[in-house]
Length: 285
Image (cartoon, one colour):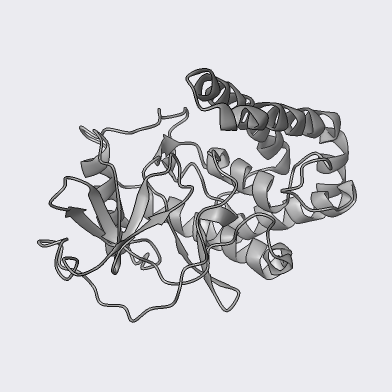
């Protein structure tokens, strides 16, 4: 979910030295903490070659999930490093650039769109056999449970090197759900499926968005083997946006007044999708 306008400054490329799982504080004693703005709920800091954030009941499940994904060949997810001496979750830092809003022009290339679909397909394939026994999640599962969803698979959580997608960050809100739940949010952010008044999107015509939606779904099917119809993506996106608007409204009412403007934005975007569903599916089908 997006409760931010940016996800910190672009990452600097640094010499990479992996920390030991048994000692997440190794080498960190002399490193200064750098606050990374944004994140699912904020609070992430970089310490040397690691990233730390507050822990919760979900922490051990997320660390186990990351370990599972890396064992299945997904080296583009952070390595789980356990907890530091302050009890914070620790994962390896992924070097590269994390795009900020307004997004750079190169984000809208077909290559990035297809590569994002490929990475999402890899995640869903690798996580399908993850053991959820006694698992604890920060966000609720959604039915039907088919895969483990990242739940915030969007450009501001992607790491790029020379314009190429090399990593995905912010896994703490992952939870089980249907494939389309993740694909819908990726489509919202990267097709995009936003009202033209939303400056986070791209100034493009509906027929071009329909073509990019089809391209995204076709790429996902090609790399995963499971077809997700464009007609199923749109209502899932609308549901996600209304859920996100309600969640953000509650956060704003609880004192996070800076989030209140996002509520109307999400609802306008959802209304735009509903109003243009026929054009998006017709041209995309």
